[in-house]
Every structure is written in structure tokens, then in C-alpha cells.
Image (tube, rainbow, N blue to C red; front, side, top):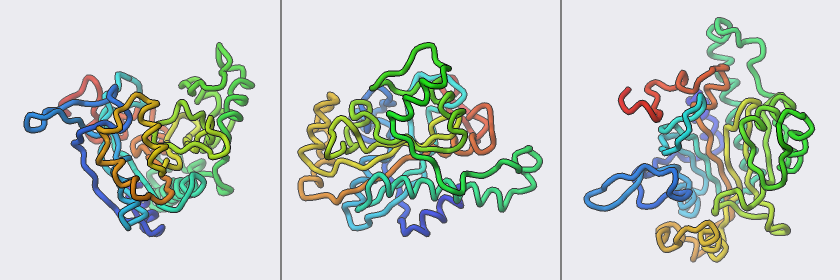
Amino acid sequence: MLRAVREQFRALDCTEINTPKIVATGTEGGTELFPITYFGEEAFMNQSPQLFKQLMVGSGLERVFEIGPIFRAEEHNTPRHLNEATSIDFESAFVDHHGAMDVCEAVVTAAYDAVAANRADELETLGLAEDFAVPEEGFPRLTYEEAIERVNATGELDEQLVWGDDLSTEAEKALGEDVGTHYFITDWPSEIKPFYIKDHDDDPDLSTGFDMMHPTMELVSGGQREHRHDHLVEGFEQQGLDPEAFEYYTKMFRYGMPPHAGFGLGAERLLMTMLDLDNIREAVLFPRDRQRLSP
């Protein structure tokens, strides 16, 4: 699976990078950070290569990808959460969120095609060969508003969703059963997306953020990034983050960053959904969860 992902990124003229996993600040705030002591200073295990890969697209490389570990101090103890996971990340200059979704779709499709072509016997043994595919006509793209309406129309939830609600596990399941294949949710409310996601120019209440979904769960989060320095700093302040703590990141934006977009894809979740596994730990050699510090 990962070989196919790498080959697809390279076919799209991407450069593979490796970014720091010990950082001075969190990507998305401090509630999900693992703190460590770094030679007497406070540091953290990185939640995401998000900020670093954005800096790369302004460096001249312009189109990059990374496959590496991420660390989330989430309290979740579910069959689909890990505290140490592998993230498949992409970032490109001069594309919008639509272009990033195109790349995401191409990468996931390439992974399915490669596994189907090279592991037919194993898929047959697992009873997955017959339906092992993604839609040839492409992944449907629903707006957040359409997704809310379709979830509510299923009648599967105890309470109707309203604008601004995030999708619960039950809502994702109901929508996935309704759609029946991989799909995107686009145009999320700005208030529930991270500070670095750009809002629509003609409607600041709507973001360019998107999620790519398997019928059973979210696999990808992405969007077009805010490349304008003043708007980026405003986003930090709105989410209660200190812009000065992110000076290493915002400094380049002062001198002009190209419009850019990207996404992060959970490798273990991709494999889990590919193989219809009940627990994400079955997709990891040495799973790391709340109760498991040693293998």
C-alpha cells in the first residue's frame, strides 16, 4: 500500500521530505500534546507535519509529501484511534482545495489498484476480492450542508444535526451507509476548522476545508491554506493561540507565500478500511494506545 502511495506521489512530481517530530509548539493547540523535556526546555511530540510542509511549498520545492509518525495525546479508547500513528501528508503550491482533493483521490485509488493487482490471492483468502475497489467515476463530493441534510434524512440519530455540529461517529456511520462508497465532505463551517484553513473569499463563514470519508469513518482532513499573513495571525488569535509562539512559521508569510493546499491521510485507517478490520490495532506492527507503552 505504501509503495503505491509513494509511487503515485512521485508520478505527480512530489518531493519526499522528513520533518521534525520534536517541536516547540503544537500544530492545533495544547490539548492533544505529549510534553517532553528537551535539554531543560519544554517541548512536545509533533501532532502533524502541517506547519513544516507548508513552509516547504514556499521554499522552491512547491509540491511535497511525507509518510511518518504523528503523536496525539487523545483520551479516546476506541477501535479506530491510536496515540502514535502514521500520517501520509501532501502539500502543494498553486492548487486550491479542489486540486488537493484530486490528488487525494488519485493516491487512494492507486493504493487500492496496487493491492488488488499484487495481492489478489490474499484478498481472495480474506473474502475481499469481489468488492475490493473504489468508484471508477470518482468520489462523490458533498457540501457540509448536504451532508447534514442527508444524515438527518436517514432518521438514524436521536437528535437532528444543526449547522455548526461536527459529525459524530453515529452520524458518520449513517451518512456512510447512505452514500455507500468513499466520498468527500467540503465547505465545512469555518468555526470548526483549524486556523490555517482558508475561508471562502465570498463567504467567511465557510471554509475550504474538506474531509475524505470511507463509509465507516474519516480517513483524510485537508483544505486550502491561509497564505495571507494578516489573516493567518487573526486565525491564531481567534483560536486562542499566541502568534509569537509560531514566529518560525509565520515569518515566511510576511514576504509572500503562494496559494497552497494539502491534506493528511491516516495510513492505519486506510489499511483498516481496505481490509475491513474491526480494530485499527490489527493494522499496526506495534500499536500504541492509552494502555500500551511497551509493545
